[in-house]
Image 1 (cartoon, rainbow, N blue to C red):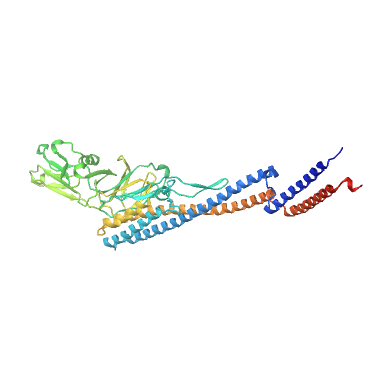
Image 2 (image 1 turned 90 degrees about the vertical axis):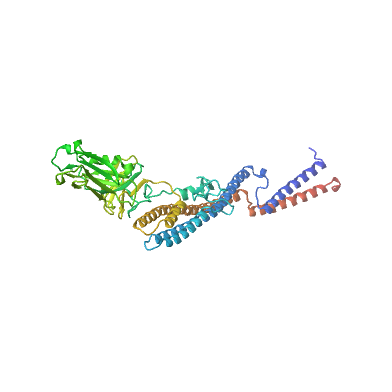
Length: 521
């Protein structure tokens, strides 16, 4: 086979170009520090690197999310601390105001500071982050969550959503809390039921917040606790004369000036039971404002609404004509004799000595003799009243409902401003109002502390996940480096070999180019 001069030149040139390409490739690798310059250099390796780099970018985004969430949650933690400080200060003011030696003006001064603290609570609830988004609006980050109307009501304009951020491949964390959960989802009373005194009560009774003795018996109904006075009624009307029924002695029973029952000897069958007498009295309750109840062989009376007006019972005999021979003993023990129209009035003591608990349909749940501080228990509910309630005073016991902290504080300020301090009844109303506030604000503080604990745990979770992400990124970078990065020792050795090979190829090419038949002639 003959080899032409042209072919030899092309082969030599090709070998030099090949060595130059290899040398250039190695130089690029050394310059960039990368083993893979082009995808074609290692298709499998570059595919692996691309997947690893995508994981690295995602993890870097997780780290950015962690930084953002940490800033939001740290701000929320600071705000929750401020809310706690304000509520604690309001609580201190409530303790100061619940003191009998203070005047109404003193309490108005305290109420002024309470309203200032209320404004601070509202301002904190509308806090924004560095991006101008409200912290407690749920998903409605650009909407101010809380506002107060002209009538003094507090309204919520956010929603109940909670935003989450991805901080790891399989992990999310909440970076917001809704205003409903934090400020509005707080049960009043003891969480199951709440007690509320009638603001017209004239006695000094103060109701306890109460407790649940058997949750299975709680039926969610509303109950009315009212107070009665015991009477000496016997349920028997006795005519004392020895004449015939034709003498026609009459009897009239009036309560607060209204006739509730009347009869005479000719009737032959007057009411002769306490239950019958109570029914006659209750028939005119709408007019007299007095109701009757029979328990344990005794008749009790009470005003249907709290009032300071004494309850007056008047028994009258008519038809008397023959002096001492005419006589009558009334239901309430009045001994009526004489030749005219004898009448006797009884004014009941305003202090109550009996209580009655009825459900919303008027069914009696329990009753008993009232004693300061003694337990009143029914249907899984237990409470007590301290002080001296008056006849007709009333207290409602109803299921707990959600009450936001703003209304709780506002109600306290209203009580401080509007309730006088001159009578035992005023102090009882104030004591009841402050007690309701204590129970409600304590529930609010428990809720607030729970949220603060949650925020703290989320911040700890961010720190933990951040550390895990850093470790993961380090592993990713190490793996990428193993696949992609250059082994400098091997590359420099290879570079030296390739340079030598290129120089050899060049020298060979020069020598071959110099060969000729004329050199051997």
